[in-house]
Image 1 (cartoon, rainbow, N blue to C red):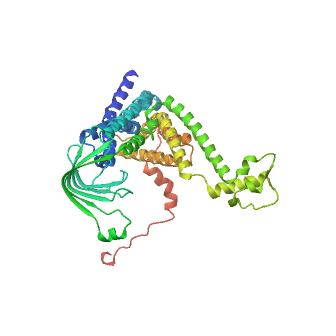
Image 2 (cartoon, helix red, strand yellow; image 1 turned 30 degrees about the horizontal axis):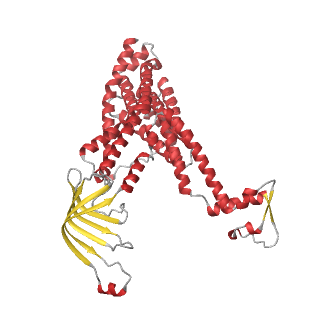
Image 3 (cartoon, rainbow, N blue to C red; image 1 turned 180 degrees about the vertical axis):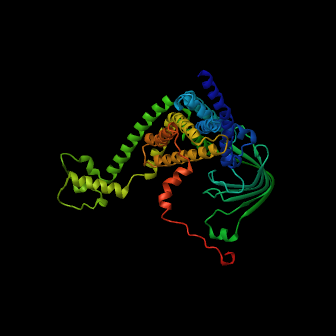
Length: 486
């Protein structure tokens, strides 16, 4: 039996490494095609793009490894069935469960590796990737400056250049700079044939050297006579140095890279602590928003006690339309609650802000739970793949690939669906993460049961026999022979 176990494990890891390499390359190229244009617009050179892909590649493993196990298990057991090795083993008294046993424990081992990889390696790579991007931002805060469009990120200026070239994108062609008018300065429009981004001692200031250009300065005055005289100026220059304060732009970019998804830097226990703290903060924030809404619209609700309150007409806001000038107003508790509901509906809470809090919390929870759920997915994929392989009895890269792709698309679509529902607040994020596995579990039971019974799940003749009574209701018309052949 040990020789059989070793044989099956060797048979499994043969296609495993090949399939993993191919799928890893495909998924990585998908990231390249989706984000390459974005990286090029930000001015990253080839070496920096390769570094970004290097730090991004570990995140691909969490999806590639379960799919690899699924496809490899279908290929192995399909090949065993196609070569009648599976039939020979079962004829020798070895059950299918015993045949699957060594690879089942191998899948558990791979699932454990995936858990440790997702818990320790991926957060470290995510952190290093973000730090590398922040270092690039520190060296050049203008990474979002793409050619062919006006850039509005710099306060008080609009900048456009037709082309950007050079190793670091420092050479500019066709530069337009529009300086908005202020109380003390007129509006200026600067055009230069060429420009050069100069590295400065202070990275928070952007230094652009312009060549062969013109400054158009418009009159900034309320004097009608001066405006009618059109006292505008045009200045030609050979070289002009311009400095821009980009500290706010740098801080904004840095904040967006460090604060929005810093939960990806943490391990499972650290995420548990962060989720508890975030949940408490979100609860306090929601209570504050609710209290503010109540106090803003119904100040008398805070005085609600013993089923009734008394409010002086002088304390009521005009918009509440509870007009009483001389006598006190008495409200019951139900009336006060009805007023509160009406105020919440009419005035409302900032829905976008609340949705952002809810969405960020759901992302954090689902990221943590997927550290656990993907290893379970890997194990379920093995059970489904081994069972399907023994049923279809087809090895190679034909039918197994088609079945594996269909199952993975089903899993991927479910993943995206529950993710969107969780982010919108429709589903609880803890439950949403495990829904794909809950769907795969009965499939694995059904396929395993069919495999143990030598089921004919994919035999077309079986379904034709079931549909034969229905097909008899629609008999085929006899084709009459043409008279010339009779």
